[in-house]
Image (cartoon, rainbow, N blue to C red; front, top):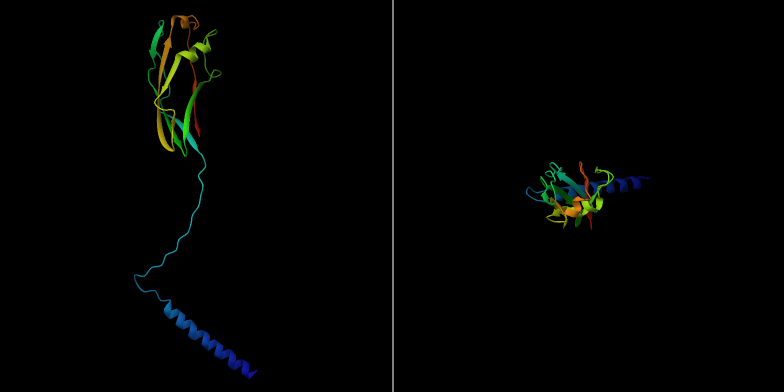
Length: 159
């Protein structure tokens, strides 16, 4: 038993000496540095946002007969996307109000929306849309007197 006590004490003293030696080497010198690197991985999925900047309402002067009528103002769309995108439009006839008997085909054909661009790449983009109503004599016969409120829906889609 005495032998075990002496061996245990010797081991304890040896461990303390090694600990002090290691601690003396671990002292950091001023101005020294150490660096490690870590990989941070993530995925950004396809994402898109479309909004109208400012007032999105367009009006036309009184239609007095065949001819070309420019819209009172254009529409500015803001597209923010993480990938390539395209913009399209459609008239929402269920949300539009036109006089009974008005030809949707004539309105669809004659209400011209001109885009400065219809596609782009990732990032923030502005799309400008101008409006024109170009009516012929024959068109006038398909559009009865009254107030027309046509709702245009724009859709931005990632490719």
